[in-house]
Amino acid sequence: MNFRIRVLLAKIGMDGHDRGARVVAGALREAGMEVIYTGPWQTVDQVTKAALQEDVDVIGISSLSYDHVLVPGLIENLRRHGADDILVIVGGIIPDDDVRMLEEAGVARVFHPGTKMSEIVEFISRAVSDRRKKAI
Amino acid sequence: MARQAKATELAGKLLEGSELALARLISLIENDSASMSDVLPIIQHSLGRAHCIGFTGPPGAGKSSLVNHVTRLLREKGKRVGIIAVDPSSPFSGGALLGDRIRMQAHSLDPGVFIRSMATRDSYGGLSRATGHVIKLMDAFGMDYVLVETVGVGQVELDVMNTTDTVVVILVPEGGDSVQLMKAGLMEIGDIFVVNKSDRPGAEEIALQLQVILQMNARYAQNTPPILLTQSIDGLGVDKLVDALRDHRKGLNGAVLEARRKERRKKEFEETLAAVLIREWRRLLEADPGIREKLALVLEGSTDPYSVIEEMFPGGIIRQNQE
Image (cartoon, rainbow over all chains, first blue to last red; front, side, top):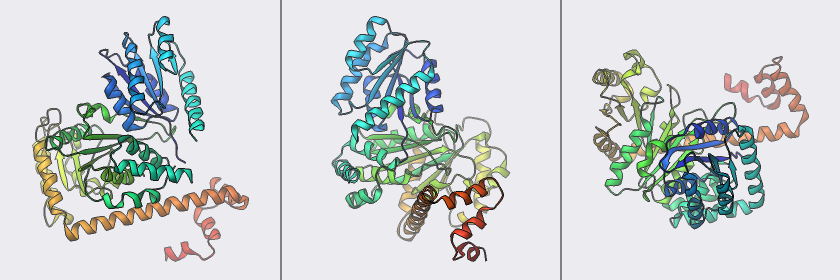
């Protein structure tokens, strides 16, 4: 077995500030994961299609200026394409009131500013390994 | 076996046109969770249709951008295109940052294009070990073209040569003086050479020097490969590249094509053999404390690898090879 966790990192919507996403990409790479980085200005359809083709375990959406409201649409889209086993996480500036909305829509975890990289790495590692155990 | 059943099921769905099946089967093969030997009997009759083209060259030469433009022109002709974009794995963490899709956004929603990013994992030849298998899967899926982009290479990461039908070597004007162009390795494997970023100073000169040097190489004695100038920022010259790709494929018939494929099968065989031997060795290492002790001697430097291997194979295969 030669298994690696594959993560798609992207920003949806009009905002191009991707420093945060890049920092996370570097940390996940250091943790031995394969990170597919598409950069900012993606649509929900683009992220869905890239995630399907790349067969990722995790999609990470970075949001600074309210683009996180598009994430429930992404999850719905994944479900329609038979890929609802992909774990979706969100990081960035997310108002507290919206965290519950995202979690109810199926987001596995929301990470706020100040989160330690190790916390993100541990969460992904554990969640992916749990899902794989369930699948086998 | 459940895994084998999963692979054969996915292979069947792949032939019916399921993108999801293609994507998941690639992962199974890449992770060694399934074997191509389970998949090949199912897809065998659908193989050999795609023209497989390798794009190689130093980091930042414009490989992804050129692949993007070539894809655009092939799509205008209605051809279906699979893209395999390889980027390096970290030798320390095993992780990778795969960023080639960024240059290919124009095709991200096109149903006739399938892009897969791959990390090199344990391979150091510019591709990943599974690349040849993934080419076959995309071929069976019905792609007319499979474009393979290597990692940014130096001079000796040449796996692409024995993996694809046509090799495009991409250089830039800043590549160095003409002695660099005379060096062995990368400069010998191109079926087509491209000087990209040709708006920069020195592009025409490097193309001219390259022509002179290639003419001196016995490998190119029959015919000198095309040398093309391109600018991947706006796609200038890429139409000529697509023409050259078509011409090269046309010339690849009969004996030439068969020789190339034989070479490829030989490489596949040797890689499979090496992988099996290494796996067997690791199994032995796990099971046999005596072998672990011998390896420990090698690791601490008090004995050399040859002596230990010789002891393990009393038939003396090493000595015979050296004589």
